[in-house]
Structure formats: C-alpha cells, structure tokens
Length: 269
Image 1 (spheres, rainbow, N blue to C red):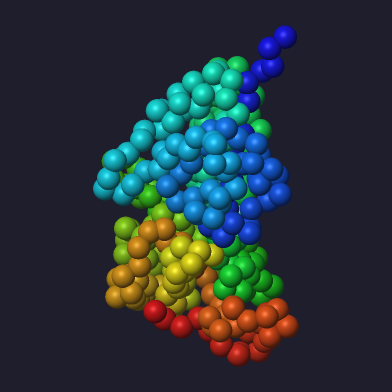
Image 2: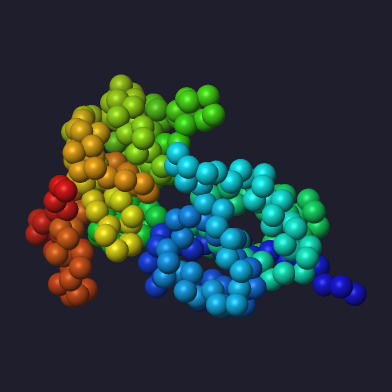
C-alpha cells in the first residue's frame, strides 16, 4: 500500500540558526524539497542538503508576490509527487504565519501534516534583550497582534482592549503603521509615557533596537530608519530591557537581577 503523502510544516525561528529545535534540524536534513519564506535566515537553510531543491515563496514588500493560494497548491503538487516536502516558515507556523490555512488545504487533499513549532520573534527578542514579557507587578499578561492592514486598508484591532497598562502588547508587522498604532492606543487610554521598544531583525546579525515612549515611538523609529522585519514591544516591562553590552555579556554578568537593580537600559539608536 502506497504511504500517505506528508508535508512537514517547520518553524524556522526568528533567524538565529542555534534557536532551531532538534526536530526541525532533523526534518530539514531529510528533505528533498524545501519551500521557504523570504525571512528565513541563511544559517537555517544551511541545514538543507545541497541536493535538495529550494523554492522561495517569500512576499517582498512592493515586489513580486506569491499568493497564498499558489503556495497551497504548490505544496499539494509536491507532496502528491512523492517528494519529502518541508514548508519552512519564519518564527512559528501558527503565529501570524498562515500555517493554519496551509494545514487545512493539505488535509482537504488527503495529505498528512506534521507541524514542528518554532520560536517566535517576540520570544527571541525578549531573550536577546532580557525583557520578560510578563513580570510580577508590571505585566500579568501579554497579547500578540498584527499591525498589518486588511485588504481594505483598515487596522481592525480592539484598541480599548489593547490599551491595558497591566498587559504587554507585542505588535508584529506594524512598521508601516506605527504612527497610527501609537495614536489609536493613546486615544484608547494608554498613557503617552508608556515604555516601548522596536526591534529590527531580532536575534539576527545586525539586529537594531529603538527604545522610546509611546508618544514619540513613531518619530524615533523614523529617525533610526528601521526596516522590516520590525517587532514592537509596548508596556512597562520595557523598563527592564538590558543595555547592549549586558545582552551580549556572559550569563553571570548579564543576570536579570543586575538589570532590575538599575544597571542599564537599551539605548536609542
């Protein structure tokens, strides 16, 4: 009996190849075709065998775009052809990665799916900069939202619910709309003095960060000239962000307790 075709949906993490899971590495090494996003780090692709086919389906801002429906159909064709298919997605497949859409499409065509989770950019940035997304007395919860507009250009978010000073807000894909996001949050009641952090290319070489207050976040991000991918962390936990020299120091020197004691903060770019 012919085995049922399978596609491995693998989270590539935020960029640093050392943050891949052991299972992700094993699956990548066994692939003969990898369909990957544009933002997957080069070091991650190094685990793909030289003999394997690599197909980039990344969406370039303002450039050529592979529609999601095309990606779905491509995965089906490859799997039904008997290929060992890996769909490699930045971060985690199930957090703003359209992984659910791909899973449903594959299952509808009788294709088995195995999902390998990845570290999302928010967790990578938090670890790199020593910013706990929740912290007793500062934030009892965290919310993840996308700052990417709907097709009609509207940012459809629960602004009043997001403007909670006791919750850390993480915004993905919000660079183009950072001014509107800040204004909407302040209009909903979040103070202009709320600490905010913008992180470009979290965990990757050349990572940059901008520290600001909500009221001047858009201006400071513009002055720094940050480019996608950029992640925003908004909330009181940003006060705990480590200075670059602490974030890069050995663990015994970069202990979070030193940051909490007021050793330093992430500087503005």
